[in-house]
Image (cartoon, rainbow over all chains, first blue to last red; front, side, top):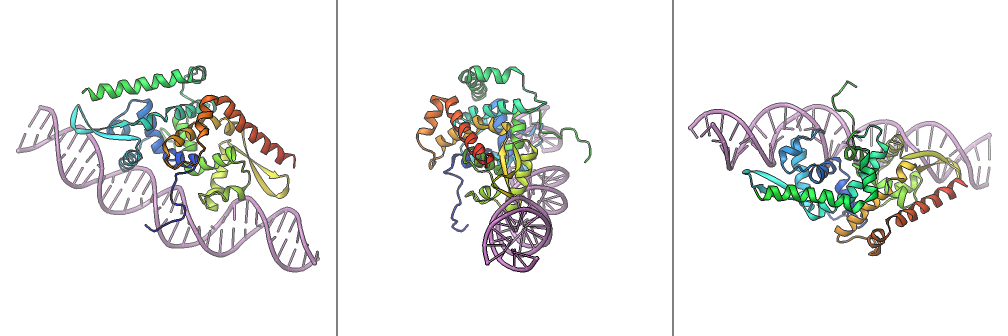
Length: 145
Length: 145
DNA sequence: AGCATACACTTGCATATTGCAAGTGCTTTG
DNA sequence: CAAAGCACTTGCAATATGCAAGTGTATGCT
C-alpha cells in the first residue's frame, strides 16, 4: 500500500461515523446486538435481511477491529463464539435510537409501535437506560453460563 | 422484476434508516447539505472525500427519489441546479448530530471542537435549532436570488 | 451572430466489492 | 467412532465503483 494524501476516515465526525455505519450490514449487525439481544454468528445469520456467510464473517471482523464487538468463546459451548458489544458500541445507542425515531416518522409502513417515538421524546435518558439494562441482562446471563 | 418474499427495506426502522444512510456517499451528502450549507453539484463534488461524478449524480437522484432533496433551478443562474434539503432531511439532523457526538468521543484525531459534544448534551434542542437556522439562512438567501 | 466557457450530467472501461453455493476444519454429541 | 453443528473460506459470477473523457444546454463575450 503506497502513501496517500487523504487516506483516513478520521477527523471529520460525520466521515468517521460513515466509515462504520455507512455500510448497511454493519448498521444492521449493530441493531441486532444492541436491540435484539443477538450474540452469535447463527443468530446474526438468521436475521430476515439474509446476510451471506462471507459478508457476515467480514463485517464481524471489521466491527471487532473497530472496537465495537469483542469476540469470546461461548460459555455454553466451547466450540461456539459470542460477539459482545463494547462500550463504544453501547454508546452508539442514542444515535441509533434517534435514527429509528426519524425512520418511524417517515416510513409509512413502519413496524415500530406508535408509542416508541413519543416515549423517547418524553424521556430520552430513561429510554436509553432501558435498552442498556436489556444489554446488561443478556450479556450477564450469557457470561454466567 | 419478479415478486419476492422480502423485497422492501421498510418496516423495521433500523432497516429503513440503513436503506438511506447505510451508504457512505448518501451519508456524506446529507452532512454537506445539512451542516456545510452546500447546495450545488459543484459544491458537493468539491468535498474532500473525492466523490466521482457518476456516483454523485446517482446519489443525488437517489436522495431526490427518497424525498430527501428537491432539485430546483439555481436562481442565480438558470443553467445551474440547486439541491435543497426537504423537511424529511432536516428532521434527520438530531440523528446526524447524535452520531457526530459519538464519533467525537471515539475518534482520537477528531477535528470537532471540544465544546461540541458538551453543548449538545447541555441543550440538544437549542443546538439543533441553531443548525436549522443556518439551513434556513442558506436556503432563504439562495431562493431570494 | 459566432465562439468560448460553465455546468450537470453520461459513457466506457478497468478494478474492487458483493452475493451465492459449496466446501473446510475443528468440536461436540450420541 | 460416526454424524452433526459451528464458524468460517473459497470460487466464481454479478454488481458497484472510480477515473477519464465526452455530451448537450445555457450563458457570456466580442
